[in-house]
Length: 469
Image 1 (spheres, rainbow, N blue to C red):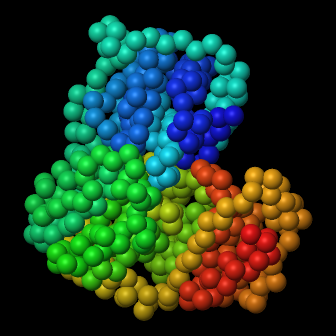
Image 2: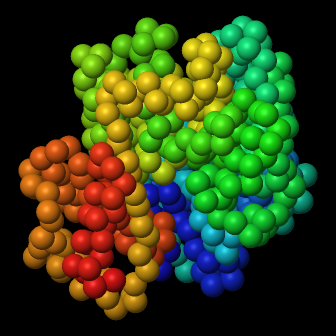
Image 3: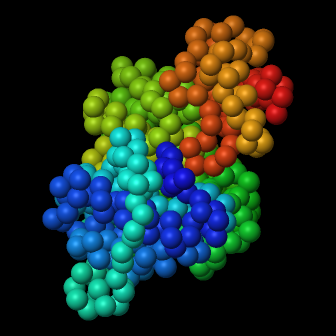
């Protein structure tokens, strides 16, 4: 079964991510385009630097081209935000990126982008799954022959408009005047080129780590977490850099290291950027977060007379809510965010550039800025755990938590419980704990936030003991 989760279809290479299934997905997208009468425009196909990504992109292109749709193909790896931007700017109906984002190196996958450069909604991916299930015969052509015939067209200078639009959004004079020294851990990913171009244009000094293509991501998870950025932290301090920046494999998740070696997590990045855009740039509007993201955003929004909007996990919900309420930005604790006026999906190229602008304008380090926010709005500590379980135990968890709606005996007073996406328990002191099944891996994710790490960790321990996992 080919299933699309919150970040597209992802599967283990050699097991389910195989040529037959990749072509099936492409054939399904082709049939979907025909059903929706959206075959008159090209479909852009991009890929990251994972094992099999470029080959898979060619298999997708061959299948689409044989079905009569023109394919725009990239002649180099590219981050997912570039595909979203191209779909939006060129007013295409679909874009496809071959990537498994931050998943382990053994995974690969396919992200489907739709009109306006948005993540495909559940209705679209649900219908796509039905089409794939019904598809029996898949036809495809030869890639080189299709290029010669003009059915597959190499996209020239695909980064130009993407880069120009980001540069136009930035205070380049502030960046040039500050002249930051930045160490960029590319994590062997596809976001390396565009960020280097922007920082060189801003006349910053930018050095790189892990720039080579490595299908095993140096033996690390291709996600910018505190654990995976230990080498970057050490190098930033040793080299006296102003900033360390890292992105995941397809350039839509961001991690930051302060000059003192402090890891700046995704929640802190969101809070700082929202505060900066409203207080220093004078933007008006609320902020959007998913239900597993810090409540400090609520406090900051309230201080400006604005509102923080909570949505389910899945960036499609964040981008839709931003449009609905004209919010300044939206993001999630896993490291993705977008800003009003840019694309409708996560973009760490723009986010990293804007973060550098913030540091340049305010004239303080990220750690200093974050300390000021905590002095004003309080300390918020988030802890998370990813729990593996036997496949036959999933129905047991579902029954206990989501059907019978039973909860652990928490020490704190429960104010309310939401089952909109997983199970989120809100406590009277504004702390919370949430457990939900991952949309991209066979895991139960538990997030907890409180005013100290011990309390947040206790919430997770209570849930683990309650579920016996």
